[in-house]
Length: 77
Image (cartoon, rainbow, N blue to C red):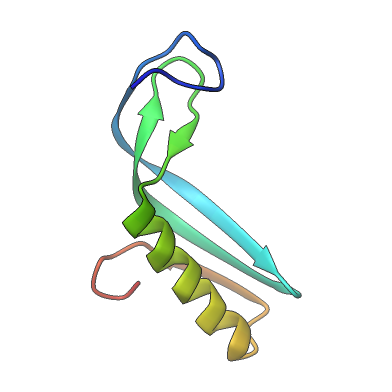
């Protein structure tokens, strides 16, 4: 797909780091599968992965976590 940010690059499979913040909780997910622009580096995460990240971040916030850094894995997210 063409990058909607830079309008010049094409995306290709890769990984990215996603940081989510909510109500005093910060959760960082490393090595998240994404489509990454070869020109500007913008990353696009699919709907299924995005949903899993949001659920995991919400669980962390509910449990009182302030900062959490996680390696993305399908089984644990």
